[in-house]
Structure formats: C-alpha cells, structure tokens
Amino acid sequence: MKFQEFYIQMGRLIYAIAKSDGKVQKSEMERFKSILQKELVNLNDSEDVYGTHNAYYAEFELERLIENQFDENEAFTSFILFMEQQRDFFDKKIRSLCYETARMIAVAHHGIEPGESKKLIELERKLNDLY
Image (tube, rainbow, N blue to C red; front, side):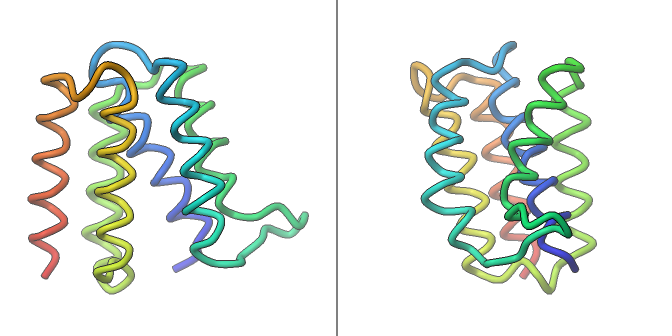
C-alpha cells in the first residue's frame, strides 16, 4: 500500500469530521495544518514523483472536498472502507494517529459537536474492530 493513498484517505477523514457540524471552520483548518506538519509529515518520508511529500496529499484532498462541497458521510465511508481493506497497514500507531487526529480536529472549534461525536464514536469502534 502506498502512503499517498493513506494520506488522501486521511484528508477524507478530516473533512468528514470537520464538516459534520455543517462547515469546515478556519480553526479546524489551522489545527489540521499544525497536525500535518507535526505528525503526518513525520510519519514517513515518502514523496511523489515531483518530490512533494505524500503527507500533503491529505491537504490537497481536504481542499478539493471543501471546494466541491463533497458529502461528509461519503468521505467518512470512503475512509472506513479503505481502513477495512488495508487492515495490515493499520497497526496500533496508525490507528492511534487516525483517532487522535480526528479528535483534535473535532475539538478545534468550540469543542466536540454532536455530529462530530457520533463520527468519533463510530471511528473508534471501527478502529477497534480491526483487531
């Protein structure tokens, strides 16, 4: 499995969490960019053919979904299906990174809203079901 696809799916997860209260807020984007620099870039050193770190594909995907007003439930389902298809990739470290990233995005704007809470609970359940 290529890290690039993982990062694209992380962009979808982040979008699903942030948009579940109706709109991706500026504070959620700022938190995401901080997580991108501190966590996602440091996860591995993979790059695309142009020398761009693959972690930035999470940001590219997030921006694409925002621009196209993509359905957050479809984005969330896409991440869950990917996760289920790539079980071997989702070790304890990756599962923790996914959940903590989603949680940090959810709390970034006035705490966790009901829609975000519902998705976080489902995400945690699905991550735990992997093993």
